[in-house]
Image 1 (cartoon, helix red, strand yellow):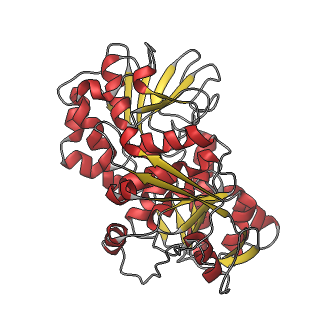
Image 2 (cartoon, rainbow, N blue to C red):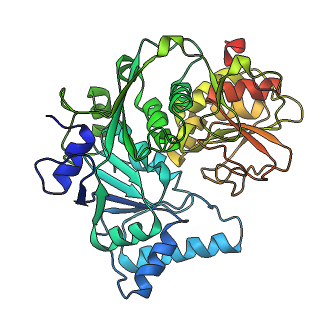
Amino acid sequence: MGMTISEKILAAHSGRDAVKPGELVNAKVDIVMCHDITTPPSVSMLQQLGMDQVFDPEKIVVVPDHFVPNKDIKSAELAKRLREWVHKHGIKHYYEVGRNGVCHAVLPEDGYVLPGRVVVCGDSHTCTHGALGAFATGIGSTDLAAVIYSGELWFKVPESMKFVLNGSLPKGVYSKDIILEIIRQIGVDGALYKAMEFTGPVINDLSVEARFTITNMAIEAGGKTGIINPDEKALQYVREKSNEEFTVYRSDSDASYCEIIEINCSELEPMVAFPHLPSNGKKAMDSGDIAIDQVYIGSCTNGRIEDLRIAAHILRGKKVADDIRCIIVPASRKIWRQAMAEGLFEIFTDANCAVSTPTCGACLGGYMGILAAGERCISTTNRNFVGRMGSPNSEVYLASPATAAASAVTGRITDPREMM
């Protein structure tokens, strides 16, 4: 019996020829990503235990992004503690404000994520990086402390679910719609501690950026990771960003899956996840006349240059509806600069959108787009739980950049095909 890509990577990193689901392994980790929320508690644990060291300063990447630029004194103290820890241990890969971005955008675009690697971070959306054929997963602050100290971490080998994406995407339908439909079908616990492996003709046709959107939201179905077997498109992406050697793993044809789900993407339509679960998906055209107060386009899910281009295509020559706030947040400095160079900022500002420096702020209800009681936001982010973006009496609707941009123009949840 063959192995899946996830099993092969974990076997290689734990010094074994083979592993099977349910086994516990101790694996070496290639990249540890740290940000300003979960890392300071990990550092405090190590300091209290007299274990204040890092296993390899070259393999730790520190990207403060959740509350930077700092929104208040407490967030400034978190950033300061992180900065001091970086300097103390000579950690080379540190992204200060002005050079930073959302961590899940910075890591792949700067060449830290390579096929076959094990990548961890104290952030649940670390599964994003599986789009490049890495085993990437979020961990808690205690495990983060352990891996910072030792460079190793235990894993239970997950079962794998295969999602075969057949057909082709209709006009106005994007990768965000695919993953919202998948989560609608299987629920927020439908892939609990599973490796969600995505394959099929549609995956092959998608850009690498679009693939990130799909793997990013694997955690919203309970997945341990989202992962895609690397093809030439993915290999070209990483070769343009890194000269380091890497090992490509792909699932065997006789690998075992706990479930195989086929999706006919030719039948998909623009989707919107209604409050208060990512699984509460409905067709945009069936949303009814739901007025909104805010539109948010950005985040580790949909803040890449391709996403901004899609939004700009909708917003070009139009205005955001009266009394609507439209906030656009490029996911990294490089994306910000590229969007500016391409004239996208002019399109956005002409449409009366606000363009921000890269930050996670509004996505987690931190700042730069907080909702008041009774307000509704359609957002390209990944979660719409109660109080996710502000007041527990607000509502968040998840959608693609096209659907979000179209809704900004009309002031209500809108099928983007109305403007195409």
